Amino acid sequence: MLSVWSSSPSDILYILELTLVVLLGLAFGSFATMMAHRGYILKFGKGWQGDDSKSTRSQCPKCQAKLGVFDLIPLLSWLFQRGKCRHCRAPISPVYPAIEVSVLLMSLSFFFLYGFEPFALLFCVIAASSILVGLAVYDLRHKILPNQMVLALAILGLVYRFWPSSYETGIKLQAIEYLGGAALYAVLAFIMGWVMQLLLKKQALGMGDVKFFGAAGLWLGISQLGAFCILSGVLGVALGIGWQYVMKEKVFPFGPALIASFYVVLLLNGSLLP
Image 1: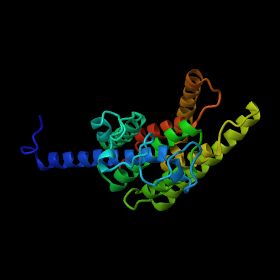
Image 2: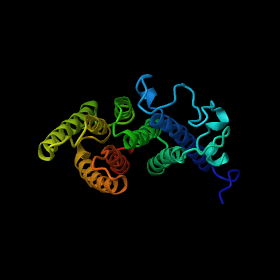
Image 3: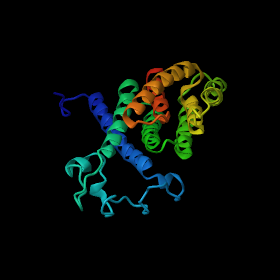
Image 4: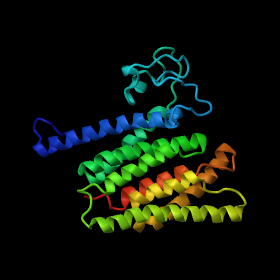
Protein backbone atom coordinates (compact mmCIF):
# COMPACT_ATOMS: atom_id res chain seq x y z
CA MET A 1 0.00 0.00 0.00
CA LEU A 2 1.24 3.45 -0.89
CA SER A 3 2.09 5.57 2.13
CA VAL A 4 1.89 9.32 1.60
CA TRP A 5 4.48 9.94 4.31
CA SER A 6 7.04 7.64 2.71
CA SER A 7 6.27 8.52 -0.88
CA SER A 8 8.44 10.62 -3.13
CA PRO A 9 7.34 14.17 -4.02
CA SER A 10 6.18 12.93 -7.42
CA ASP A 11 3.89 10.34 -5.74
CA ILE A 12 2.38 12.97 -3.47
CA LEU A 13 1.90 15.31 -6.42
CA TYR A 14 0.13 12.54 -8.35
CA ILE A 15 -2.22 11.93 -5.42
CA LEU A 16 -3.01 15.64 -5.20
CA GLU A 17 -3.65 15.83 -8.94
CA LEU A 18 -5.88 12.75 -8.82
CA THR A 19 -7.80 14.19 -5.87
CA LEU A 20 -8.36 17.46 -7.73
CA VAL A 21 -9.62 15.61 -10.81
CA VAL A 22 -12.04 13.59 -8.65
CA LEU A 23 -13.36 16.73 -6.93
CA LEU A 24 -13.71 18.60 -10.22
CA GLY A 25 -15.34 15.60 -11.87
CA LEU A 26 -17.96 15.33 -9.13
CA ALA A 27 -18.53 19.10 -9.07
CA PHE A 28 -19.05 19.26 -12.82
CA GLY A 29 -21.16 16.11 -12.54
CA SER A 30 -23.48 18.00 -10.20
CA PHE A 31 -23.55 20.80 -12.77
CA ALA A 32 -24.53 18.25 -15.42
CA THR A 33 -27.54 17.13 -13.34
CA MET A 34 -28.66 20.74 -13.18
CA MET A 35 -28.36 21.09 -16.96
CA ALA A 36 -30.21 17.84 -17.59
CA HIS A 37 -33.05 18.28 -15.09
CA ARG A 38 -33.56 22.03 -14.72
CA GLY A 39 -34.25 22.89 -18.32
CA TYR A 40 -35.73 26.28 -17.55
CA ILE A 41 -32.24 27.60 -16.82
CA LEU A 42 -31.21 26.67 -20.34
CA LYS A 43 -34.20 28.50 -21.83
CA PHE A 44 -33.66 31.82 -20.11
CA GLY A 45 -36.37 31.39 -17.48
CA LYS A 46 -39.16 30.23 -19.79
CA GLY A 47 -39.08 26.65 -18.58
CA TRP A 48 -39.92 23.45 -20.41
CA GLN A 49 -43.24 21.68 -20.30
CA GLY A 50 -43.62 19.49 -17.25
CA ASP A 51 -41.02 21.33 -15.15
CA ASP A 52 -42.64 22.12 -11.80
CA SER A 53 -39.59 23.85 -10.38
CA LYS A 54 -39.98 27.64 -10.39
CA SER A 55 -37.20 28.52 -7.99
CA THR A 56 -33.61 29.21 -8.86
CA ARG A 57 -32.63 27.20 -5.76
CA SER A 58 -32.58 23.41 -5.76
CA GLN A 59 -35.57 21.82 -4.08
CA CYS A 60 -37.13 18.42 -3.52
CA PRO A 61 -39.49 17.63 -6.44
CA LYS A 62 -41.88 15.93 -3.98
CA CYS A 63 -42.19 18.26 -0.97
CA GLN A 64 -40.59 21.38 -2.56
CA ALA A 65 -38.32 21.83 0.48
CA LYS A 66 -35.30 24.01 -0.32
CA LEU A 67 -32.11 21.94 -0.31
CA GLY A 68 -29.13 23.03 1.75
CA VAL A 69 -25.41 22.47 1.39
CA PHE A 70 -25.47 19.01 2.98
CA ASP A 71 -28.21 17.92 0.56
CA LEU A 72 -26.18 18.90 -2.49
CA ILE A 73 -22.78 17.29 -1.96
CA PRO A 74 -22.19 15.39 -5.21
CA LEU A 75 -22.78 11.64 -4.85
CA LEU A 76 -22.13 11.62 -1.07
CA SER A 77 -25.43 13.28 -0.14
CA TRP A 78 -27.37 10.65 -2.10
CA LEU A 79 -25.38 7.82 -0.49
CA PHE A 80 -25.57 9.13 3.08
CA GLN A 81 -29.30 9.80 2.76
CA ARG A 82 -29.80 6.37 1.19
CA GLY A 83 -31.37 7.82 -1.91
CA LYS A 84 -34.13 9.69 -0.05
CA CYS A 85 -35.06 13.29 0.64
CA ARG A 86 -33.87 14.38 4.08
CA HIS A 87 -37.12 16.26 4.66
CA CYS A 88 -39.93 14.01 3.41
CA ARG A 89 -38.03 10.74 2.84
CA ALA A 90 -39.32 10.52 -0.72
CA PRO A 91 -37.06 8.50 -3.03
CA ILE A 92 -34.50 10.48 -5.03
CA SER A 93 -33.93 9.20 -8.55
CA PRO A 94 -30.66 7.26 -8.96
CA VAL A 95 -30.26 9.12 -12.26
CA TYR A 96 -28.76 12.04 -10.29
CA PRO A 97 -25.77 10.14 -8.86
CA ALA A 98 -25.46 8.17 -12.11
CA ILE A 99 -24.90 11.43 -14.00
CA GLU A 100 -22.31 12.59 -11.45
CA VAL A 101 -20.46 9.26 -11.60
CA SER A 102 -20.53 9.32 -15.41
CA VAL A 103 -18.82 12.72 -15.52
CA LEU A 104 -16.32 11.55 -12.90
CA LEU A 105 -15.43 8.42 -14.88
CA MET A 106 -15.05 10.41 -18.09
CA SER A 107 -12.79 12.90 -16.32
CA LEU A 108 -10.66 10.12 -14.85
CA SER A 109 -10.34 8.39 -18.22
CA PHE A 110 -8.80 11.52 -19.75
CA PHE A 111 -6.58 12.06 -16.71
CA PHE A 112 -5.21 8.50 -16.68
CA LEU A 113 -4.58 8.55 -20.42
CA TYR A 114 -3.19 12.06 -20.85
CA GLY A 115 -2.14 13.22 -17.40
CA PHE A 116 -2.75 16.45 -15.56
CA GLU A 117 -1.20 18.89 -18.03
CA PRO A 118 -1.94 21.15 -19.77
CA PHE A 119 -4.45 23.03 -17.66
CA ALA A 120 -6.62 23.58 -20.71
CA LEU A 121 -7.01 19.80 -21.01
CA LEU A 122 -7.84 19.42 -17.33
CA PHE A 123 -10.44 22.16 -17.22
CA CYS A 124 -11.91 22.12 -20.71
CA VAL A 125 -12.24 18.36 -21.03
CA ILE A 126 -13.83 17.92 -17.60
CA ALA A 127 -16.23 20.79 -18.30
CA ALA A 128 -16.95 19.33 -21.75
CA SER A 129 -17.66 15.94 -20.15
CA SER A 130 -20.36 17.50 -17.98
CA ILE A 131 -21.93 19.14 -21.02
CA LEU A 132 -21.85 15.87 -22.97
CA VAL A 133 -23.58 13.94 -20.19
CA GLY A 134 -26.11 16.73 -19.68
CA LEU A 135 -26.85 16.78 -23.41
CA ALA A 136 -27.29 13.00 -23.55
CA VAL A 137 -29.74 12.91 -20.64
CA TYR A 138 -31.66 15.93 -21.91
CA ASP A 139 -31.97 14.41 -25.39
CA LEU A 140 -33.15 11.09 -23.99
CA ARG A 141 -35.85 12.89 -22.02
CA HIS A 142 -36.97 15.50 -24.55
CA LYS A 143 -35.52 14.42 -27.92
CA ILE A 144 -33.77 17.74 -28.38
CA LEU A 145 -30.22 19.08 -28.03
CA PRO A 146 -30.48 22.58 -26.50
CA ASN A 147 -28.64 25.28 -28.42
CA GLN A 148 -27.08 26.76 -25.29
CA MET A 149 -25.40 23.51 -24.29
CA VAL A 150 -24.12 22.81 -27.81
CA LEU A 151 -22.78 26.37 -28.00
CA ALA A 152 -21.02 25.94 -24.65
CA LEU A 153 -19.35 22.77 -25.98
CA ALA A 154 -18.23 24.64 -29.10
CA ILE A 155 -16.79 27.52 -27.05
CA LEU A 156 -14.80 25.09 -24.90
CA GLY A 157 -13.50 23.48 -28.09
CA LEU A 158 -12.31 26.86 -29.35
CA VAL A 159 -10.64 27.63 -26.02
CA TYR A 160 -8.84 24.31 -25.92
CA ARG A 161 -7.81 24.04 -29.56
CA PHE A 162 -6.51 27.60 -29.70
CA TRP A 163 -5.00 27.67 -26.22
CA PRO A 164 -1.47 29.12 -26.72
CA SER A 165 0.29 26.02 -25.40
CA SER A 166 -1.93 23.46 -27.14
CA TYR A 167 -0.56 23.64 -30.69
CA GLU A 168 2.83 23.61 -32.32
CA THR A 169 1.87 23.35 -35.99
CA GLY A 170 0.99 27.00 -36.42
CA ILE A 171 -2.21 28.96 -36.18
CA LYS A 172 -3.05 28.60 -39.89
CA LEU A 173 -2.83 24.82 -39.91
CA GLN A 174 -4.71 24.74 -36.62
CA ALA A 175 -7.49 26.87 -38.08
CA ILE A 176 -7.74 24.68 -41.19
CA GLU A 177 -7.90 21.48 -39.17
CA TYR A 178 -10.42 22.55 -36.52
CA LEU A 179 -12.36 25.53 -37.86
CA GLY A 180 -12.47 23.76 -41.21
CA GLY A 181 -13.52 20.63 -39.35
CA ALA A 182 -16.45 22.44 -37.72
CA ALA A 183 -17.69 23.69 -41.10
CA LEU A 184 -17.17 20.35 -42.85
CA TYR A 185 -18.89 18.33 -40.11
CA ALA A 186 -21.92 20.65 -40.05
CA VAL A 187 -22.32 20.80 -43.84
CA LEU A 188 -21.95 17.03 -44.19
CA ALA A 189 -24.53 16.43 -41.44
CA PHE A 190 -26.97 18.83 -43.10
CA ILE A 191 -26.57 17.07 -46.45
CA MET A 192 -26.96 13.62 -44.86
CA GLY A 193 -30.11 14.74 -43.06
CA TRP A 194 -31.55 16.20 -46.27
CA VAL A 195 -30.83 13.04 -48.30
CA MET A 196 -32.25 10.77 -45.57
CA GLN A 197 -35.38 12.92 -45.39
CA LEU A 198 -35.90 12.53 -49.14
CA LEU A 199 -35.44 8.77 -48.95
CA LEU A 200 -37.42 8.12 -45.77
CA LYS A 201 -40.08 10.81 -46.35
CA LYS A 202 -39.58 12.06 -42.78
CA GLN A 203 -37.04 14.07 -40.80
CA ALA A 204 -34.13 11.81 -39.87
CA LEU A 205 -31.61 14.31 -38.50
CA GLY A 206 -32.63 17.37 -36.48
CA MET A 207 -30.90 20.73 -36.60
CA GLY A 208 -29.66 20.11 -33.05
CA ASP A 209 -27.76 17.10 -34.38
CA VAL A 210 -26.33 19.21 -37.20
CA LYS A 211 -25.14 21.83 -34.73
CA PHE A 212 -23.59 19.13 -32.57
CA PHE A 213 -21.70 17.86 -35.61
CA GLY A 214 -20.23 21.35 -36.00
CA ALA A 215 -19.21 21.53 -32.33
CA ALA A 216 -17.65 18.08 -32.61
CA GLY A 217 -15.63 19.22 -35.60
CA LEU A 218 -14.02 21.95 -33.48
CA TRP A 219 -12.73 19.31 -31.09
CA LEU A 220 -11.95 16.43 -33.43
CA GLY A 221 -10.76 18.14 -36.60
CA ILE A 222 -11.00 17.11 -40.23
CA SER A 223 -8.74 14.07 -39.76
CA GLN A 224 -11.24 12.33 -37.44
CA LEU A 225 -14.36 12.85 -39.56
CA GLY A 226 -14.41 9.30 -40.92
CA ALA A 227 -14.02 7.63 -37.52
CA PHE A 228 -16.68 9.87 -35.99
CA CYS A 229 -19.22 9.24 -38.76
CA ILE A 230 -18.70 5.47 -38.84
CA LEU A 231 -18.93 5.09 -35.07
CA SER A 232 -21.96 7.41 -34.93
CA GLY A 233 -23.72 5.29 -37.53
CA VAL A 234 -23.02 2.02 -35.72
CA LEU A 235 -24.07 3.36 -32.34
CA GLY A 236 -27.09 5.09 -33.88
CA VAL A 237 -28.37 1.81 -35.32
CA ALA A 238 -27.81 0.06 -31.98
CA LEU A 239 -29.60 2.84 -30.11
CA GLY A 240 -32.50 2.83 -32.57
CA ILE A 241 -33.00 -0.93 -32.23
CA GLY A 242 -32.77 -0.76 -28.44
CA TRP A 243 -35.12 2.24 -28.27
CA GLN A 244 -37.79 0.51 -30.34
CA TYR A 245 -37.50 -2.65 -28.26
CA VAL A 246 -37.62 -0.92 -24.85
CA MET A 247 -39.66 2.25 -25.47
CA LYS A 248 -41.85 0.87 -28.28
CA GLU A 249 -41.28 4.06 -30.29
CA LYS A 250 -40.01 4.37 -33.85
CA VAL A 251 -38.66 7.91 -33.34
CA PHE A 252 -35.58 7.93 -31.15
CA PRO A 253 -33.04 10.57 -30.09
CA PHE A 254 -29.88 10.32 -32.17
CA GLY A 255 -27.92 12.70 -29.89
CA PRO A 256 -26.69 10.08 -27.38
CA ALA A 257 -25.09 8.07 -30.21
CA LEU A 258 -23.33 11.20 -31.45
CA ILE A 259 -22.21 12.08 -27.94
CA ALA A 260 -20.86 8.60 -27.22
CA SER A 261 -19.00 8.60 -30.54
CA PHE A 262 -17.57 12.04 -29.82
CA TYR A 263 -16.29 10.90 -26.43
CA VAL A 264 -14.69 7.70 -27.75
CA VAL A 265 -12.97 9.38 -30.72
CA LEU A 266 -11.80 12.30 -28.60
CA LEU A 267 -10.41 9.96 -25.96
CA LEU A 268 -8.59 7.63 -28.31
CA ASN A 269 -7.45 9.72 -31.28
CA GLY A 270 -4.31 11.02 -29.55
CA SER A 271 -4.79 14.66 -30.54
CA LEU A 272 -5.21 15.68 -26.91
CA LEU A 273 -1.63 14.78 -26.11
CA PRO A 274 0.33 17.89 -25.11
